[in-house]
Image 1 (spheres, rainbow over the protein chains, first blue to last red):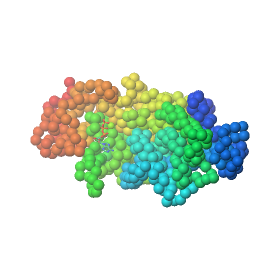
Image 2: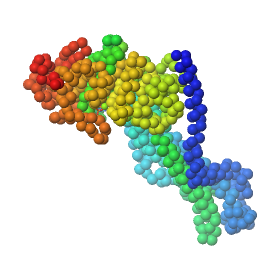
Image 3: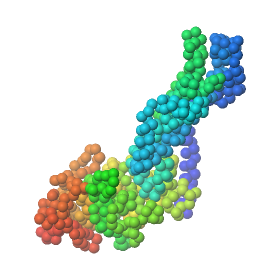
Length: 299
Length: 333
Ligand SMILES: Nc1ncnc2c1ncn2[C@@H]1O[C@H](COP(=O)(O)OP(=O)(O)OP(=O)(O)O)[C@@H](O)[C@H]1O
Ligand SMILES: [Mg+2]
């Protein structure tokens, strides 16, 4: 008997070693895809540029909005690689500083939307009783209004500025997560492994977070990645309407609108932030899709 | 041995058929209807019956996973029919279940180690730092390679997945396990392996089984005693050796005589009986089997037969069982 117990211990040790070797496998799969890899690089570089803007931007003070009127509307040159805007500010610096609000804002919106929406969806999916029904009705109510219109209305009521714009966007955004998760939770709830956990005497909260949540994480993560792009655009829209980011600060969306009147002659003013936005949105999309494939194959 | 491990006293499991907004439902699906039965320590009790007659529900009721409408369940002498989740905690480890679909009974996002640890947590004799060792031991017990402990369920074949489910059931150190058609989703060759494993484990670990199945031939091979269920009621119990040779209830005979046809969709062997399967929400009056019975009399339509003992561990629920026995019409020749 003693000998057998010992051999179980040795086997256990061997098993742990094997496992550590396999851990990198999924990451490798992701890195093997060229497009996903390129997207990841673009996203990482953009985030780094935004975080270290004061060191990366060639003219940090212009990036923050200080005017430079004598150099207005300069086309791209060696002095300012991406040209200057109507107030003569260096476009490259502006775009790098704009990334701060655009990226941080969209991350905030999506993060908090998921943080509110996912637990509510889990609860509503697992409890089909009154509390679940109430959550469903509230979600339906929110989704019956166009999200953008409600965000505009909330923004007007709460006040202007980019922090309030973010809040105004979170409020109509979270119900999408609730709806996604509720449907998934409802079908997972009927799986036998939930009954097996109940059979072991585990409670509601444990089952929701240990069994149901991991099984809805894949669609949630994919939705988060795919939502980051639209969130950048949504902040830009509010800013354009004067409700979001206030000049002289700018996010990418606002910069596109600022350049719009001169689009035919001084095209770079719109194209530079628009291009940045396009690139990042596409990168999030490609990365999200790749992740969906890889995580999905685990099912 | 020979003591009852589980005593069921007139248990009922009813599901609401319609859900009014206020008040009680007016119609019920009586999936388990007034069942009294003892499960004896160390035995393998078979439970057989047509699809939808309430076999799974009965298994789940004993484990208190399905809502008990009325009646008493005694486990090792303790009445667990009134206990809430907290009161059931000490009994959860002692009673486990293995389901028909092994793939659906394993969380796809959990490694085998996690799945087994979750169950081992109920076994108070194993300390937390020994979970890995215990998991390795459990896999060894069900003839799986311990190297695969960090794999996910989808990396295993159906037979292996079912072994993992058996290992999970064993992790809590149970006394009683319900196998709910645990082998019917598997290939025939794999089926035999899993069944042999079950029998070995029963001997090795002194387990008591409730074995639910469609397949009469497996039943005769595995079980020591068989209970026959019809429309939510147990209509006959006998030793497996004698049940199908000398049945005492007309339904048991019909079940044996029914031509088994292979159902290509589920791979199950289904016996086809003449007549309609009764609706559980509105079963026939009197003896539920009377519309399909060759020997019915007026009393069968009017009165529900009492359960009568025919031996130490056998019972039958038929008005005319003595007469039919004397006439010998049910004997299988
Ligand atoms: N949770 C539930 N809610 C409502 N009705 C249920 C529930 N569980 C089972 N039933 C009903 O109870 C009846 C018996 O079902 P059960 O699964 O116990 O039958 P079974 O004998 O195991 O059938 P099978 O051989 O097909 O597995 C069915 O009519 C089913 O619809
Ligand atoms: Mg069943």
